[in-house]
Length: 310
Image 1 (cartoon, one colour):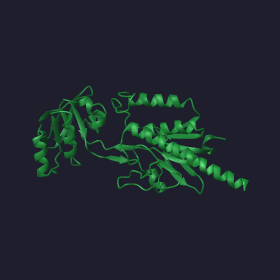
Image 2 (cartoon, rainbow, N blue to C red; image 1 turned 60 degrees about the vertical axis):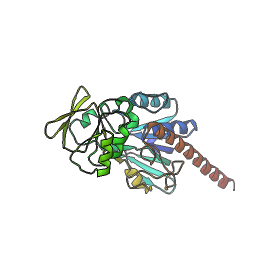
Image 3 (tube, rainbow, N blue to C red; image 1 turned 90 degrees about the vertical axis):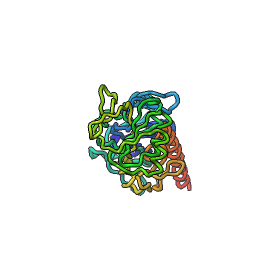
Image 4 (spheres, one colour; image 1 turned 180 degrees about the vertical axis):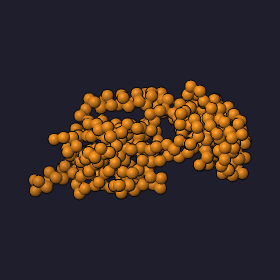
């Protein structure tokens, strides 16, 4: 029977740390697993993955290559595509990818992640992941004791500026024309010698993937070697919405401690859920979801067996 007509125990949509971890647990529990993934993980451009003990500093593509090589030891199937439609049927789920192929599963695990809002400033896109970052926990240590900038135009950057001050004495908050800071916040920033620049930002001056300065609208160049942004994210929640999953106002799926959503048979793990956005957390959530899925399938199989015997 062709793979697209098979009834899978589980289809995992997304093959990042959460999806890959879940696939291993499920495969080792002798579940037939299909992963559908388009290969566009959030952190692929990062200069190194951190806060994952034994994997500190590894490049994200290398991390994923190790994961996929290890999964190749198990009967896990991969489809490189984008899942665009999911429908809940009475006893199964139907998934359609962008090529129009359909797949059926007893359970669904969504690990679709998030997409970063990269500020529309020349240089931001080019330096994303090597000199421009979104998470001080993930990339702050490598920027310590250097000239750090914080670009926060859409959202108030006060809290993040205070946090970055723990990394360096040279912190500059660029609001790019926004004037959201309250008087008390300005006072606290000044006490910590955090400069606030409200002039419009023209571009990031860079060379060979290294940030040199921030150019302002008046032509001034402010020396800067790394930049953090406080610009928001988009949760990839299109499939959550199609299935009727309860989500936060920002689109993150609301799950219980076993990564189950309010929709029976649907589980969410990784950045698209409501927990912290760390690779190690995503991986752990994938494991939790996999155990929950296997146990739920066991209960259903046992119930069916009891019905047959009766």
